[in-house]
Structure formats: C-alpha cells, structure tokens
Image (cartoon, rainbow, N blue to C red):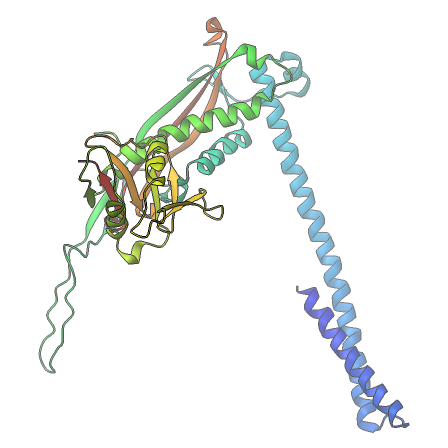
Length: 381
C-alpha cells in the first residue's frame, strides 16, 4: 500500500478545509449550509484516511519484521556453513564436533561437498569476472538443445509491390537450428596447507576467489577459442576482416571491423582483445590525429574504441601471423548452456602427502554463436 500517497491526499484535504476557514475569517462570517456539509465530509474522509494510514503502517511493520527474521535466518545459515567449510578445510576437529559442522560427504571422491552458500559465491564470482559469459544468452536446460535460427543474408523474405487479384508469391527462407549439447569439464586446484594453517589468513574467501578465477579463465578461453570436437564458442564466427600486415593493425581495419556488424546489432556490442593488442591500438589515430582508443571511466571496462567498450582478456591472441586478434560484437549473440551447475568439493586426505588440500570443480556446458550477424573478427594476414 502506498502510504505516501495517502498522507499526501490527507494533507490536501486539510489544506482545503483550512482554505474554507480562512475565507470565512476574511469575510467575517460563519460557514454557510453547503460549506458546513462539505467541511464535515472533508473531516470524515480525513478520519478514514487516518485509520487506513495507521493500519498500513502496522502491516508494514509486521511485514518488515518477517523480512528481517528471514534475513537473519538466512544469515545464520550462511555463517554456519562458512564456519563448517573453514573448519573442514583447516581440519579443526574440535570446531566440527562442538558445532556439528561437518559438510556432506562425497562418496565418489572421498571429499566433502562445499556448502551451498559457499558454492554459490564461487559461481557468482565467475559471472562477475567473466563478462563474456554474463552477457551471453544463457540456457540452463538438461540434454540437447536446438535453437531455431533464420539467416536473412542467405534466405531473405521477398517484399514487393503487388497488383490486385494476383496471388502473392511466398518466398519464406528456411530455418536452421543451432545444436547445443554438453561437455564435461573439471578444474582442480591445490592449496598449500601452510597457507591454510595460517589462522590470520581468510582461507574461505581465498578459495572462493582462487577457484572462481581458475574456472573463469577456462570457460572464457573456451568461449573465445573453442576446442575441436567439443565447445565451439566464438570460433564459429563467419564474418571476418583480414589485415594487410601480419604484425600490425591499421585504423582503417578497425573501422572496417566495426562496420562489419550491422547497425541493428551494434547496441550492446563490445571489443574483445588481449592487453598487448590494446596497447597497439592506443597508438592508432584517425585522419584528424585523434586517438581511436580512449580511457573512459564511465565505460564498463574503463576504455572505449569508436564509442564501444573495450574488454581485455588474457585468453585472446596477441598480434601474430594468422591469429584472430580482435573480436567485435554483441555477446548476447553467443548462446551458452549449462547441463550441470558448477559443483565444488574439497579433498583433504588425497593430497596430504603433498602437504596440500585439493579443491575440485565439475561442470558441463556448451557454447556456440547463436546469431552470426552480431559478430565479426579481425584476422591477421
């Protein structure tokens, strides 16, 4: 209920009543019959509004209490799982026994599953530091997925002038499908027990960041390059601009790459390149000697090229013969599918001879270009 609107309505009624009294005072008279009726109606409406406002405030207070209680319960679960995970990683048996904090055992690996709240933090971190994955069109479904696709560049619908009483000829292009399946991937990180045994070190957040970065680096690499026989990613881009030189990029070639993506798909487009390529582009100037690449704190990634954000990835190739050095386009044209959500578990005993603890992640995913018109790539000669 909008309490603010009720209060404003009450204030308007009281202002109207005050105006009636002021008029009577100025004219040195009493309220006439019509004014008296109106005055009484105003105060009856004010009384009802007061009751409604008080009831709404009480309801909001009770709702807020329920929300706070739910938040406190959620926080308590998160704190409990945080302590359970830290105690298990550090091997703190007393803490585990005192609070019954042992995480669920994973029979397959002899390890322990990371609590849900911790695993969710790792997954959320992956999306935070992997914008290509975050901005893609995501499908979370089991099994094989077929996405219908209509390419106007090869099968366009004809629109033409038509005469009356003559049949309209149909020329509808055929739909094709983009098939997404699932490919299992695993990531294993070993963490030093010396680091874990340092009581002053926040080992939980270290593992969250460490695993998230490892998973991000792998997934982003697959999204950019793909692997033959499994995830295709952006390696399936068909529109390309080839440079004249194998070891350099010109301003004209950057402009051609930008314009290779139609205007209808420019909204949301970004540049993807390596740090070394970005450094090379910083030196490029247009015919008026203005730099093409500019620092821009308002841009999502801190720099823009021809008005579009520049995302830098270590997974992109540097400038070299035959390499794809820049990808330009809208990441929403990339379809990603996770058959199995990322699951994380800790292996304490298995790597004890190495004085380490293993953290392992499993996930099953696939990625392909969903809309070819949304992307173009720059390939060195």
